[in-house]
Length: 354
Image (tube, rainbow, N blue to C red):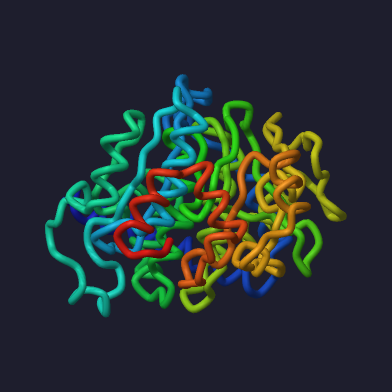
């Protein structure tokens, strides 16, 4: 008699072999051919798709995937700025509860409640709309195409695991819950309530490069499902950006059938009667990575200050996580004084620098 367990093993083996075959086609016939194959077969069972709607109040979320036991002052600054500029929003900070990189295990205090860290404790006291969720982030990939990265063992081979985990979980959470994802190295300058179905481009050596540091979509958006399937095929354990901006940019091109330049600052109408709006670079990334020193000069250029306050929803602060010194008169410091005063004051009082 054919046992249930044998049937389950057969289904798992079939799924594994199918994934391997598709990945083989992906690398042998090229990305475009396979993307077209994905699109023509892209159907989502109504039972799989979360209700496609914008949640009210708006939900903003951040991800800290390293497993470090405390937020830094600069990370807290990003959260505080979002909370101040969007007081009606529900803000969640998803934090990996164990170290993802084994070399960090010695500095991680197992079981430490993040709210016991001074800067996080003060942040939670001051910002009533902020909550911290400490958990294993990997299960968020369950019930999405991205779970294949775990079941096939590919994810365990990652040499950039904290970054790959963050790139994957943000898309899975958007698919399931909807809302607005922000990188922790952003300073929010104004309300983000108008953002939906949108990502942003950045000035880069590659034209129309779309970053994944700011992503706003309702739950169940068809593009997110296609993106997750495309991410599974594009994943390379040794490539830092294999689940990030490069893959996001390619997925948008295929999903919206854009062989030439992407449409910037206007709606693109794409597969499944869906739409995506790509923000111009100054909306989120007005000062790109190539000009990151503009944030850290002892005296900032007033033209940069004016540009940010005239055109930007927020400023992605390139280099903030790499220990760059922040002089008191720098653009970064002055933005922090204005938009995350609590985090900035606590940092400078306890360590004399931000």
